[in-house]
Image (cartoon, rainbow, N blue to C red; front, side, top):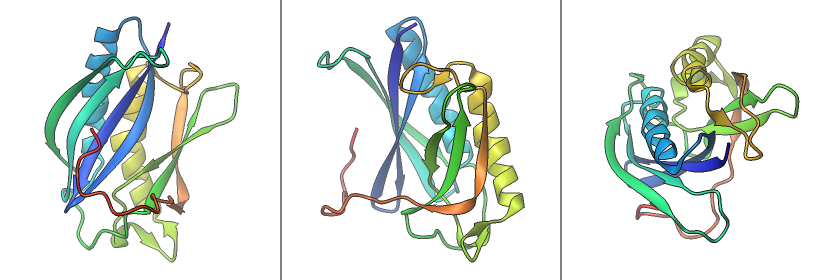
Amino acid sequence: MPVFQVDIQQKVANDFLTNIYHVSVATFTDAAAAAIQIATIHAAGLPTSFFVTAARASTPAAGDGAFITYPLNFQGGRGQAGQNLPLWNRFLVSFNPGFTFQNRKFYPGIMETDQVDGQVLPSSAAEINTMYVTPLINLGFLCSPSGSLYVSGVCKSLVAMRQLRRRKKRTTPVI
């Protein structure tokens, strides 16, 4: 089956972030439906200060340029007390396609109460596994960019330092 790219855009305060996923589905229409499913799961694990504002599915053909964008307004579902850590601090989630190297996703929304000295608390890691990792795996179509379906995943115990762009801070939507 072809591999389609799904971009999920989220907003916190005046900052926009984008996470990229790949799905192995039969048609472009299926990829568009998958984008909504992924956006729903993605929002569920974010703190309530985050909003998922758009989902975009695009075709696998290089230079094709075909895409479908859905404007959304899904509020994060993980009620946490405390302040957000700077946006470059992320949960590091490793997805396992079974027979090749693990693929990493940097999941935003880590709060100061989710970590101690750069270590994710076991309770927070378990919450991300329950609200984000397991539901994505259970969809059955999430895959690596090469098309290998993910069979398992886990939130790692270290706070990841995701390098954001060094350009001017983005205050307008990407999608």
